[in-house]
Image (tube, rainbow over all chains, first blue to last red; front, side, top):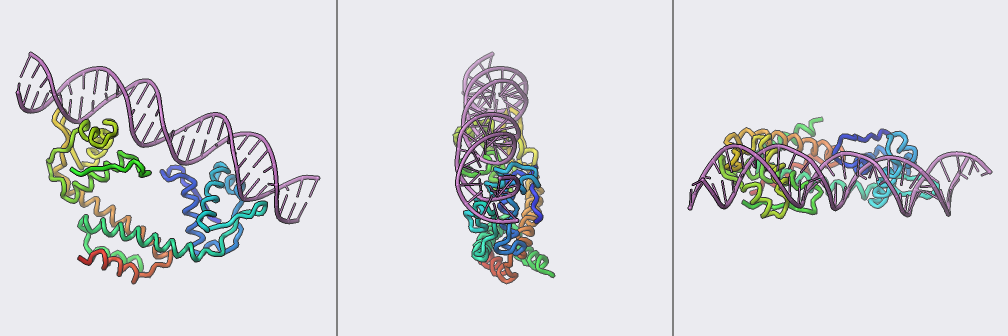
Length: 122
Length: 122
DNA sequence: TATGTGTACTATCTGTGATAGTACGGTTAT
DNA sequence: ATAACCGTACTATCACAGATAGTACACATA
């Protein structure tokens, strides 16, 4: 598991963890029912406080990205597919907002089509 | 001038002000050399501290969005066009990042083309 | 039984944003 | 001149969120 945090980032550590782990799970880099590092182990690896990991894990459980079993650990949710679908919806909405603002700023439709083409080149 | 701030927003007030005013200037709703509300007046209107306005104005001046004349006030920069160009570049970069992530999440090229079409419909 | 796990507390530190108050010099209209 | 604005620059203080530190308890498992 490659999980890192950026202390200089304005975004809180616990939010960085939430987004990073959710992304890994949604994109399939973490398999359903896969065992996540324990709160204490991950805290030691990242040199941050266990409470911060706990906060992130609790939120990830609330989002159905993972589930916790007392005494055993945290695991990737088997319903991760539903999370992935919701994730796509949210991303599309966010991109739509960006595009609307781009339009008002004077960015042309052609600029954006070119951009999409380039990103999906290979 | 229609400037508002959202106290519930996680983003600091001074940053909301910076972005809002820069957007108004870049999109032409504020004309070059137009007189902005004074620090004290705007603070009174928005019911926030004058220091917070001052912080935003200082940053906007650093970005060449406005210029200040001691004793007279703050005015929209005549070089606002250069700011607008830089703004467009940054927006394109931001959208490119969103698109890259969208691609890895499984959003198709067709989805995005449709989205662009819809936003630029009228 | 020992070890590792999630979970739940309380207390405290820290940095940032925001506020409060004061002060000084430049500009402008009366 | 002078009053009423303006930008600017301080210092002090408050408020809040994020993060840390430490402890404790119940459960699982080798």
